[in-house]
Length: 127
Image (cartoon, rainbow, N blue to C red):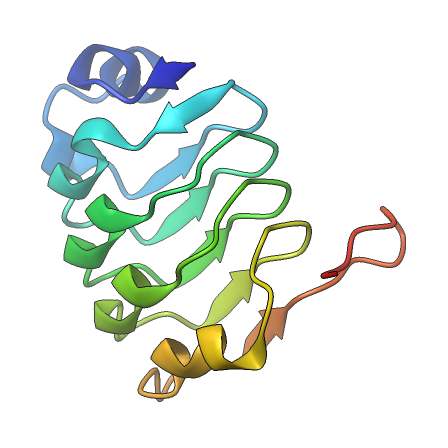
């Protein structure tokens, strides 16, 4: 699998400083590890759909994140997202969250307007 590195981020965005990245689209890149993604502290819009991501740890430092697409990954724990207080739109369709209890960590996200857990068009849902 692919790990997110400063080189990967700079190559895909053209930015030299990780703090300068505001929008990041890394769809279907075989990413398994979020690596240094947490250093993109000003990131507002993130698309990681169609990867093989299981652990969201580095996302906990993304305080500016408003839009997050994690559809079609291997996520089981949403705990790291509980500190993403600016999160407004979250797509989790096609992951491995098995119970409503696992969604409890999102309860403190006061700005969350849209939470997608299934995508009927793509045939993605939760077991």
